[in-house]
Image (tube, rainbow over all chains, first blue to last red):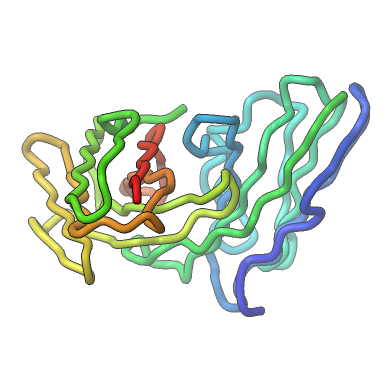
Length: 114
Length: 110
């Protein structure tokens, strides 16, 4: 595709529910990142994929958060038993692969847990 | 967690003036990048400087990198009202993890 696509753009869910956030990276980009951003803060690293495997998941806050990228393209961030503190903008980025390449970001999914 | 720090946290200047933003980091890096964000949504890549480079230019942007001080600066010359945004530095470590700082809010008054 032309850019990184994230769906939905907004999601409102009730506390305790399960949500899935989707990221479609730029075609051919092997690296994919998930970030979480709260108001007035910088993007907080969650997880990074190289191909199908999670190369670094050290930013996932707890075991309610999980992400997959089964075919090395689309990725899904899954949050179980959502809490109000999970409310944030979730950003996805992809990179062609090498470390010295720029990351392209999607417009994010604004998650609100009520 | 974020390992980079930008300063100042907020900067307000008059159109036409230069804006200088600084960033520090704590680990060894492969490169450092600057991004811009409008309205709290998607980030736009501005410029990348590799760890073996000291200065880089792109249009009205000038970036410097001092690996001995673990710091970088972004200079925007002849600022415009449209430059009003949040600016973030991000560094890439050996494992390709991209880590962002907290950001600087730049306001350019017309």
